[in-house]
Length: 401
Image (cartoon, rainbow, N blue to C red; front, side, top):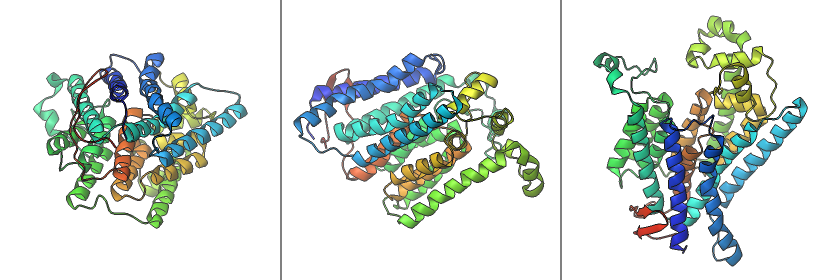
């Protein structure tokens, strides 16, 4: 597709501004809980800019959009989650603006991906993810206190106990999302792939590290583009729905002793003591008033800035079983039965079950864009870098779609 180079550079500029905004949050220059207006400026700026070429296409009818099915999926999730939230809000007589905020964060990655797939080349996207990896590394190093890390600390690194002196809470999801992209294209960018994987292991989130190992095995065995049948997709979907229900059962405070006695399973320790937050809500007679309501209740009665940090449990408590069913089936459909994408989504579900990451809009945009590239691009196309300054495209290699 031919697109005006100034518009294209404006889109890239808006994405870079959004990335820079995230960088300020990663290094704690800005506070996510206190800087709501600034936060949503960074979230919505690329989306607003992206409307310009969309309107041009709709007016001139000179291009057939790609990623329509996936964008409709995002709209469907947004609308259904909003309806459920409004019903529950009406039933309880309470509403939180966090509902809208979380809905925007869930939907906006679909819109970012729609813009990227339709108006940017593979080399544009490659340039952005390389820049994002540099931002992730800089953020990681700035937050790392080298003076407090001793040789004994390094020796004490334990996967079982989830301990590492290098563990980071700011950029693990970003590093994970970027590694998914780089691992898939590792033959074209081996050095970038190495540093993306290294960062995931340094940030030391166990689910992400396991994912890296599986993805590396898949690409080394050249199995990334095989198709899996619908039966596996359906079985996997019901598996995760069942896993959420079972985990919720085990997290309930009245079942804690049963877990210990019958299963010898300490759910509090296993959940890194996130179970205490679930217990707090249940013991205080939590009644959902929509998406974001657990966060609101925790911040009122537990700790400012607190979230449940168990995203699938959060969706179950806030939107009920139907919310979980819609989320799992919808996100699995995005993979279009591609094995690599299926593994990525499955491990991401594991992360959402065990911890959080649901509202990481930049990170989800990178994950969804990678999955979209697998579905819409020829894998053997050259991926070259481009150099951008605000509004000026200095050099272009590769071809626009």
